Length: 236
Image (spheres, rainbow, N blue to C red):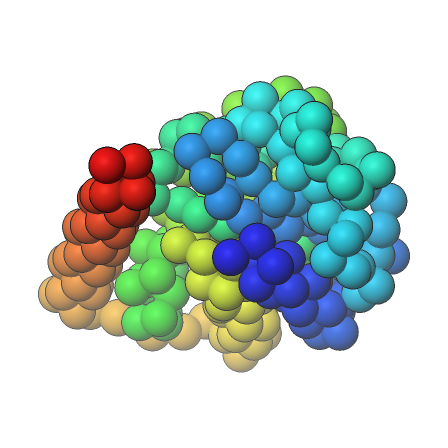
């Protein structure tokens, strides 16, 4: 599993870079691979040029594991990732990037709240904006806490966007949805404003969102139970 996860992280990193969601050494990606272990992108490396051996293994306190072979430091924003994992046991991956339109909304402190797009309502409800938090400090994870339980992604004020999901591809897809939605909202604004979904349609989508989240939680619980049974059988 470790090799597949590392390859997926590197591929997502290249997609982020190729699509202009990050530049230079911006952005970071992590995947939770155990109860107290994550694989995270290294500090100071372009997401477009990562190799699997560069990725860093650390615990949920941010300590590099003794048997990590990367020889590198984890991303300076790893605390943000770890805060999400501690608050949301169902989350297995976090993607942070600086996509142009989403970051512009974050700089303007404009959340994507109007229910224009069914996909946005279904995946996020809305996309809120955090308070500004100084990069690489404990302020960043604290700024997420009002939102992490109820949303799958946020805009980081004057910084970028972050999304989290059940695996690294789900988190990437949500990041892509954030940026695509931001482009559409900008176009709607330029055209003079749009017509939102009817309240009853929004309510229906919100119920669907709650249903999908409950179903995902049941699936995760079942997978954890199967893993526990396998460990018991192996030790019998």
